[in-house]
Image (tube, rainbow, N blue to C red; front, top):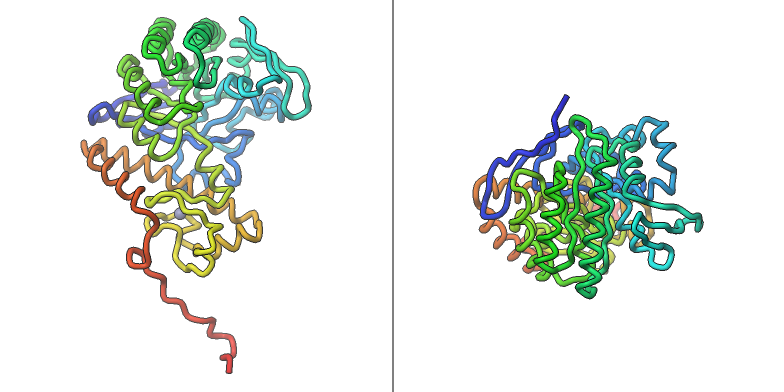
Length: 392
Ligand SMILES: [Zn+2]
């Protein structure tokens, strides 16, 4: 049996490169987890997700409990078998989703009662039942049930919410059944207030978890406020446990957060952008619906080895999106996830060689430099189809 543990291999400033050992395989950190909301990373097969280099994915308890239902997945052998993903899976508790239901939900001391966004049916989430549901899903990493208030919010509301999340963390831990190679993470809350974040870290480390997440960020605040909050939070977190920043973010967010000591991320940005014709690249975001790509025979990025870049032109992808063909979102989601994984590998290698500061400068320069010009990336030599009769 494999123990669940994280070892730090190198430190560069506050940034850490390490390896996470789990019952479902190893994960090299820093890592980005693609989001498999309803039991699928949208528009991707499990093999194509693996081909991007992703080692761990995320599943949403809220969505899976409503459809197809936790008991069905349990009866079918758990989430790994159900979705054909043998690697580690982290499941969130459903807390974040139910909090964002607005008028459809009601919070009390014991949990949250809410109406399904699908059919209006009444459901309830508590620290105990979400922990049990994640157990039945066979989640490698189970998340505590927490409350995530939108920012900005008055300090007393943030404080009361954080303290309730800490009481829920204790009850989540009591409901958790420890198994070799599995883990449960506590979630640090407290908005952007350093004192509240510190109080939250103290409460969680007293309970004791296999890893610690930072929740309640990237919920409406500016990037520099998020970074300032990380600056006062990560130094307080246990140095020998993985740190996971939930729901973040852009490539700039990931780099800035790794520089501040974060090891794990998840976000819908690369997959969502892939369905709306936006490609993440070394030179920033490129919109393939733009008319300038209509007769561009070049790949999205000369540095990418994904299926979209190796086999197809920008012109073809432009055509697929204009024609609303399913293949467009499929290829571009693949490309964006490949970019995110390549970025994380670059960051990890830089930490291992203590070169993260130099890489950070280079990446920022490239992101700001704009799309490749025809000089940087020339058009390939094309020949008109030779089997056709020449036009007189
Ligand atoms: Zn690509």
